[in-house]
Length: 369
Image (cartoon, rainbow, N blue to C red; front, side, top):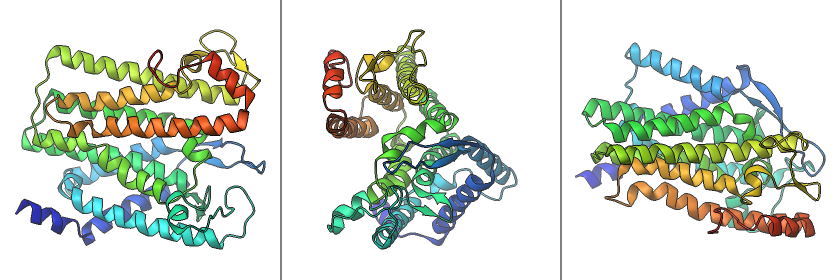
């Protein structure tokens, strides 16, 4: 019976369609009208650069206030997302499939020669649909790539908050549940607090917008990164004090490395002479930062991200591999991305990159990899 219920829920319902429509509609309107710092993006190959209104934190706080009002007035249940999880998953998947097909068709028709909108088609439908045709497609003034990343990160938090409410209602909330939701909430809130750093990431400046990114942002991030919350809803885990402290330290160290490395690179791109850890930065060939975290490993930010992912799963204990899907997936993804980035940088910087590799031999984890 449970399997039949899951299969039935895979068919998008009107209520799930309405929820997704209102959610994305709110983000579009809020992103357009709410105040926020306008941040210039990276310089594109044609010399132009996009500008991003970084009001994600304000949009998130406003959304939480509106939802809180709705819960207080009993217009909706705080567990609605947890109750309709599979329905919302299937609805969002169908939407991402539809959007990626529209992006593919619209991209092929583009006659623009700008770096943002120029069509990059190989003629292979699967390749072009998967990786995308345009770098930064827009719709009604909205940068879709930036918009979908924001939607995915907020969606992850909303799913978790609904799961937390469900845990409270069912009486399953304990230290494990609290730690998982606390760590994720801090990570997501921090993401929006430093949202402008997102404008210089690989996804924004280099990846074209196709099914890979649309699905990844709208479906994969919110619904798979919250697997631990779903698992804890059905499985009770009692952590010892030692395990809880170790879990907390993993999160703190991961956060310091992840945020510190990304911030150092962002500051360096804005001001190459800015001090790193109180000293003038070491720069290879006038282009590559080799100080701070970037003098320890060439992708030290990936190490921080992996430690954070691990801290989200450790509250689930060691009885099952299922809650560790996120860190395992992220390890595979980041190694694959690191290899792609290494190849791109080697081709772009040539002998400068070779010199940097000699000075910083470790890729992600010092003395290991």
